[in-house]
Length: 219
Image (cartoon, rainbow, N blue to C red; front, side, top):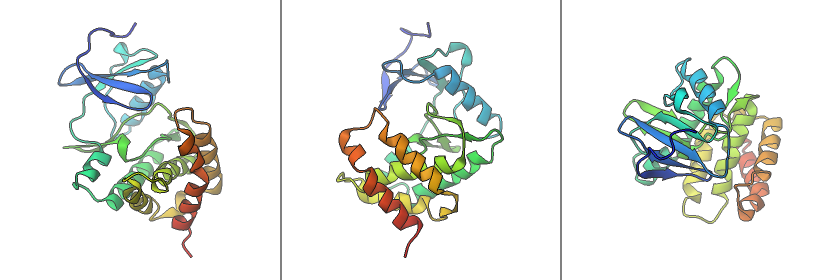
């Protein structure tokens, strides 16, 4: 049943879920259209948190398949901080790279599959990674591929954030040794099959891959 009805104001929304205030310590993220599995997501978050990885605490007893109760983090997303000039775009990409390396050092081969600056919160205690709905056990090369493709799709688009996204991609791939051919190919396939993307975003995948290759393998 979750805790429907006991939430406060809406404080954030993503492609597939909304986040509501519970109190100063906790929030409720509620999936739309039955997306994801909050119980499985909570278990992964607790697993990596147990190894010191920076993720919000969760209350498993209050979680359901569509609702996840988790620690309320205070601070902007890294994307918002970048837009406000609090962190440089390239530095944001470097932070994502560091978080990927740190995650892949955790036992269990957990990969996030959606790690980008809008899923990193900058708190007084440092960066925290949110939105683990896509996490699974897998190859780190796929994780690097997904982060690269996500940033590259924005970088080759026509939105104002395109130029910062290109700098973020450059920071992410400053050391491209973790990016693999197999991981990049699978990341592109998965993004193409992602039902939350627009037709325009899907059309940009080819150009995005070309950009990734030009950054990772400069001539």
